[in-house]
Length: 244
Image 1 (cartoon, rainbow, N blue to C red):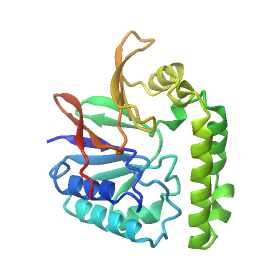
Image 2: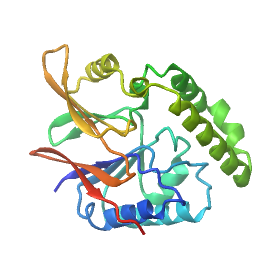
Image 3: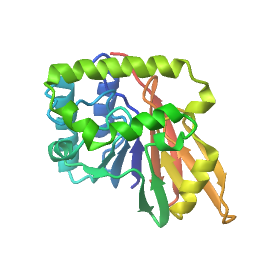
Image 4: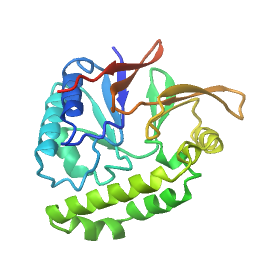
């Protein structure tokens, strides 16, 4: 079989077709996989593991059913759902991964990341990321009632979308020097990440003269994207999402 990778689904109650596509994916394309890795931004926003919204409940139930069948399930926080924690993992049977994490995929050491830390040219975002990951920032936020957190999440999302619209496209893409540095520091020739919404496979010339590769996962906006990896190699696939 194969190991599957997805990211940037941005599940949102306002886009039920994406949620249904994900539930179908778990029951079909991911059925029988050696493992499923979700590399961040499963949700458009995650306000805490105590979220009782119908979408949060439905998705966690589906993931629990999936992992209960014996499928290893791994998840990484993204820039939209960085408050995912141990509670979510308890509810779903998933293992929470550090960003970055190196895994052995059929004999090839592979670096897994969400991808936002590679966008070092976006200085303002990197400053916000460092702040938002701190316990001092998160603790008072998580202490707020759920309705307050939902409104705060909506406000932050609106603000970040407005700021992103004013930034040059290349600023929000990965920095090539940072890619080479991270791959070298972790002694890998393969990197898999999401975040940029620019699905592709890029060759990477490493200082060791080894031939490296950076594989970018796609976002689930107009199509569902997933990467399959097995002993024979990788394949980046997409399928249309039917409107409900």
